[in-house]
Image (cartoon, rainbow, N blue to C red):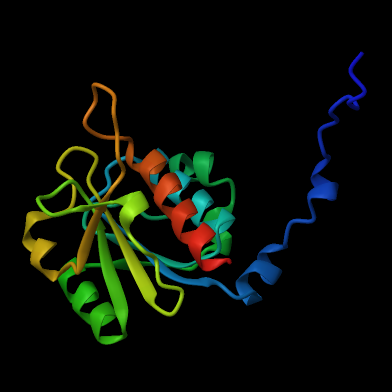
Length: 182
């Protein structure tokens, strides 16, 4: 006979989540998320929600990436556009140069020659990071590849050669969260 108790889902009140005000005042991980020409508002909303879950410092929306407020972004963000700091930036190249001067290590999430598999990349808790994710079809803009310090890719063994950008963001942000929260 199984002596395990019947699982009981927690009510929202029992999760002890921060208010938007508490989140804004809390310490964030030294990680910027940069979205380069993302088309889908649902993907943008999902990245906001994941960035909230893992306490990312800020999101930069570049190129054609849609910005809040918008109903389609809110469908997946579920209010995270209010908690996570974000900024729309016209020139991703200028942004990357600025972040590099500010001491951020620029990490491109892209399949390129010489990329490092995610599980083989050592995340240094003493560093600040900017994680760049590109367009759903074209990936990171060709013109900025030379500005990026390191490229990481998520290993895959199926028939497809890529993941949806919001799924990719979930995996990447979790890895940084896990490494930096130790």
